[in-house]
Image (tube, rainbow, N blue to C red; front, side, top):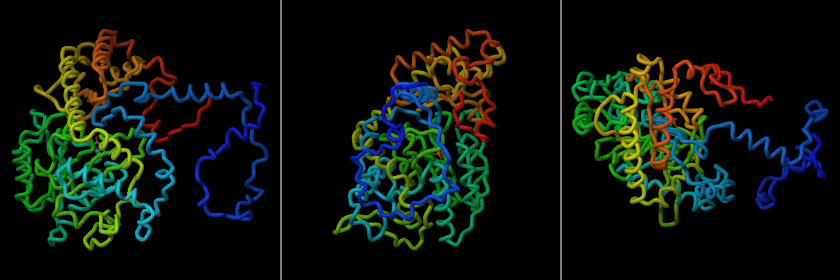
Length: 484
Ligand SMILES: *Cc1c(COP(=O)(O)O)cnc(C)c1O
């Protein structure tokens, strides 16, 4: 298509904003940038389109995807809340984006006092929220944090001359828990969830021994249920010398209201990319800082950020440290976003956000239970699990059908078929950032789906470019090229 392009398009594509200070980049010299002729292209067929056509093309592509900015994401366990744009804007400051990770290292600390101060202050805030003594910001994701925690558990026992062989993981745990425990060298002992929907003390006791390294637990668990026996569970694990690991990837239910140290936990990881203002999906970028109680500080990864009389500095002097779990100090910009978010909300705001998250989940649960089976009676915390098992039997409508049909109605599917202990599971987490209007819309959308003949749902979604891909192949052979 002929456009009204007067300038050569290379200028459009390779324009670098003048405002970015690039003076400190090393001068590579003329010779070193010469590209061998064999590697040079003969031609570069860039389409010659006018600007508006290009804008419409890319805007159209961006709208092919679901996003929190455009759609409701009641994605259980994932905390897909709205993340304020202000935080994104603030971390785009070149003083943060152009900070070289190598600069935040020993000897260079005087050049990045501001960055170290952010890390130091956020650490204090997270300690306040969890009751932990110290945090490391190195882990790049929740799973990376879990591995860090498991290595700390191991280091703790080894320092006592013990080599315990197994970790306890409930069957409702996020899949990363058993994976991290295995990677950390432990055998997994799976704890079944009873009909009450949580790990019961009597089940735990059957699996405790002096060979147990600890328990990895989420409370509220992925069924959205808070464990009422948590005190007794913590004591029982401690009695055999084990440690308690809290999977705090999803901290929405507790933040500002309950400290995990008060529940008896020794180690916790938080997903800054779920609870604290970084959008997530497709694998990153994330941050899974790990906090520990006083007795475990000596095992944290190096370095820790400290404040001394001459300012902030990095402390590498931890002889019992597990070493490094990720390069540098983690995903710094994700950490900064969490810092801004927490400073803006303050303790009161965080507490309120958590309470609204729980209120929203309960409102939705209460309204949905007339339409679809919601096992486990009583209040839920930040999320709950519905089951389409009955609908499947009566009408042939499965959890997958509901999920896919929701896409046509503008809602991202909830987490489905997890946890495995609920048949035809739909795990729903509305988060605190959704309005009553949106929650009501979901109820009506599900009502509409249930009233639709099952055959009409089997090929949903109908309004997307592709409908039901082979999900395993789509992940294993991902092809992101766009071809008309
Ligand atoms: C998301 C999640 C994890 C894993 O976090 P990643 O950042 O995806 O590695 C672990 N546990 C729970 C409960 C989660 O929701």
